[in-house]
Length: 618
Image (cartoon, rainbow, N blue to C red; front, side):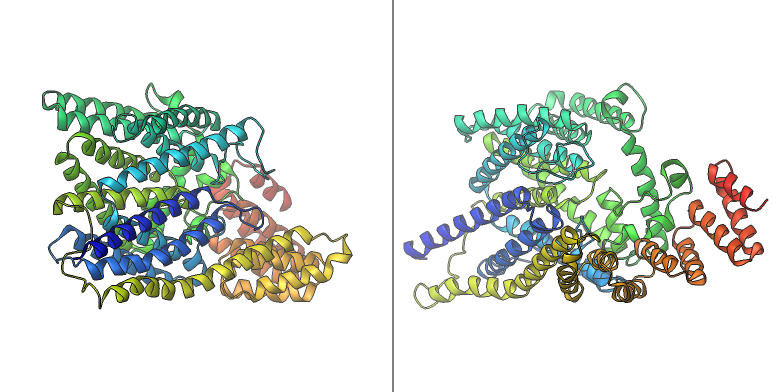
């Protein structure tokens, strides 16, 4: 290989690594107040655009440097592609396919998110070596500085934006205190580990120390236990493995101590033991209901799950009876708050097992990497593996929030990249003899951009439609005001744009229909809502909206029909049965009314609703 070609290859790798790392950082930081969902959809749009460009780099890397069927890289590729294929099949079979592809409202955990994450993961596994891993650490420190500074600003009431926020004010750029706590914990962990790495300059170590202090302050003020959980498990793992590898005399003591503290932590989260006051939070108990509902979904639909990101549509059907009795009949969730259960429940056994295989592959490779490393390389490897372990720990009680998940997948890919580079005994680079110096140089220069552009064309169209959808939906929401008759035509115009958007989120269509109704476009609103109900008959929001429309139209039998439909998908809703008692009594069907009363008494006998039901039929 000529000197000129070698230098071009190195520069090309260096620039693509910067693109990868800067892209991940920007995804986490990005938000927009110009769209309906200011946090998740902008991150999804950017992540799929980044993955589109990296896709060309990824294909080019496999073209230039072949992998053998017995290599760890081949296993990484096969497991990742199989996982994506399982997700794709589940998405195609999802009852509301658009949700399967782009994800649930204000979650966006659909197929396209996992496609983007997988591309980032695979490219990191191909390109990251020990030299480039320092860039990952430095980027994590700088991102932590930005997020922790913003978190402190939010806590002290100096936020740039006035959020309509029902949570603690510390939501950072991810829109939720739990997600904010988790990402600050992960980034502050890398900042902490960087203090012991010689290749990190004094300036970055000073910044890292600032990140640690501000992040801990923000995490504690957020009142979220998630960040503390991440830090605890990651540091215990780091110390245990480091002592196990470098201090053989104390390895068993370290493992025992780590196991003991980890057990206390888990018990504390379950409201048992001395750490209850530190780690227990009521929301952890609530998550138990989510997890058990997800397990039931998987049991009923083991092959392909209930559909990609369709947990919310099935939750009330599978939730335990105690949940509505303890937390209310209208309270729900759209996610299992456990990534592993979520994947099994919504995408089925093959996707779930392949995801576990992917994690096991990273973990095994990471341990082998740490065992074979020394000096700074040992600390770098263990830092990334520990941060990845912290990410997986929060995945046990949280969702794949894009701004957090993108780092977990980058760390996983980076661990494999380091393992691969060590296995080869050299940094990943273009293999000798693969390039004809003159004839093929232009071809290779053009190959990656060509593939990237081809990938970006459909992804760019998708991104454009998502931006339009978000922007138009926000305008509909802001303009809707029944007393502002001058806004009628504008509301109808933007609502029609939302309804006509080929990738429109069904929830946004629903909100547009309600706005049309509020602004006096009654017939069109009813028509659009009936379309939504026919496309997704189990969506309880649509059915409740339909009840409002039909009640105002005095269509008693249709209201009864819809409420019976609700009872099929929300069988433990005593309030719905009480309303049916009233409707049946009004229509003169006392037998059906009595039947509804018996249903209420069967599971909610000691409630005010049961008392009202009995009084109605006395």
